[in-house]
Length: 190
Image (cartoon, rainbow, N blue to C red; front, side, top):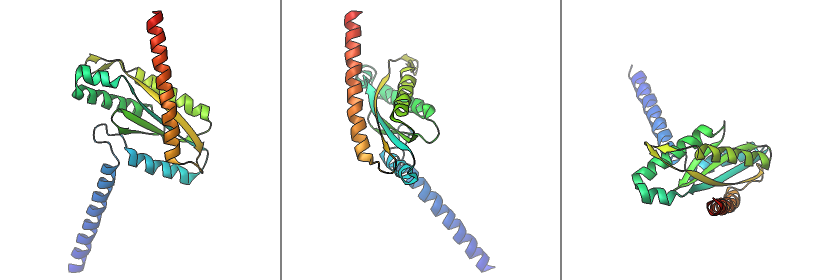
C-alpha cells in the first residue's frame, strides 16, 4: 500500500515538475505584451527548420512606420494597444508553420520555414504588409498603421540566423526608405 502511495506521489511530482518546466520554457520564449514568440522562440523554430533541411528558409524583419508619432500623439498605453493589434494581425495572417515574433519595441519578424523561392517569400511579405495596413482603428481611435518589411531566404541546410536577420534588416531599411520617398512624392504631387 505504501509503495502505491509513494509511486502516486512520485508520479504526481514528476507531472507537476514537467508542467512547471514547460510553462517556464514557454514564458521565456513569449513576448509578455503581445503574446507572440520572442527572439528565443525565433531561434528555436529556426533551428528546427534547419534540422529538417529541406527547401529554403526565410526571415522577414520589419518595424512599424510612424510608430513614434502614434506614441507621441496618443500615449504609450495606446501604442501598446497598437502593438497588440499588429501582433494579432501577424498571427492571423501567418500560415501553418510560419512564426511571427516581436523582437523588441515596434520591431517584428516572421520565420518562413518552408519557402520554395525568394519570390514566394516576397509575396508573403506583401500579404503581411497588406494585412497590417488594413488596420484602421484601435480601441475606437482611427489609426494609420504600416509596417516596412525586408525578407531574406537561404537553403535551409546552410542558413544562418544572424546572417538572414542582418540581410533582412538591410532590406527592411530599403523598403522603409522607398516608402518614405513614395509618401513624399505623393504629398508633393497631391
